[in-house]
Image (tube, rainbow, N blue to C red; front, side, top):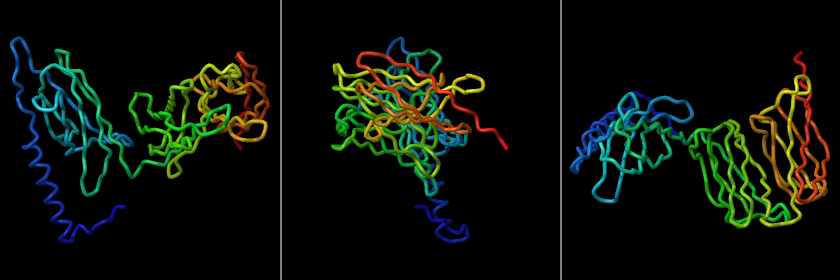
Length: 310
């Protein structure tokens, strides 16, 4: 929770002075040292550009730390008004971390391994997540045969550039709880006893998201493959981002996901009939029943009718 302080108050003036002092001291204390180079080595320039993930604006006063080992290879710098920090380092693989905290902004720390081997140096884009604009995400991971939650499954949510937004391990009941920005992102779920699962999740502003993912047990002979291809009924063009929900014959949700850029959703489930619900903005919804057969891939085209604008 953030409290707005009157700019005329003594506290606000003192806070402003302290913040400025911290930034000034940081710039001096965390200046990147000149590396001690071995024969034939050349110092390389690491340019780290720090921005707000949700809005893209530059972040001043972010502390950038590059570490090649625990003792001898430590470099630090602080970003200026352009959001950039410059570090001269020796060649090698570095763990780069970025963090920023002030009275009015709160960001999650950021980290990435950076290979400093290019003679021209390396540009690093560090996009920090603004915590007040992260929304709840729940992923319920089920065994698609027993319909029981899968504990200790690894869940990773990441964007199209590969940046991890949230990740963790499912609980004893198969639930993963995280926080991520609004948007549509990739979801990867892995467990050594199940087939790896790739899908999409969408988080809405002030709402977040909740989804159910069914994992296929490895080497189970009852499993069948299902592809749903969502198409515009008028143009027959693929519909990206259509929401897919699959129900068992008893009406329980067994898997949820979204179509990719080609309009395709894929899953692997036990043999049997499933009710399939398909929906997308600006289209009428669809509901149908499809049957899976073990060891067989079934592909179904689903035509969604556009809703005519009034």
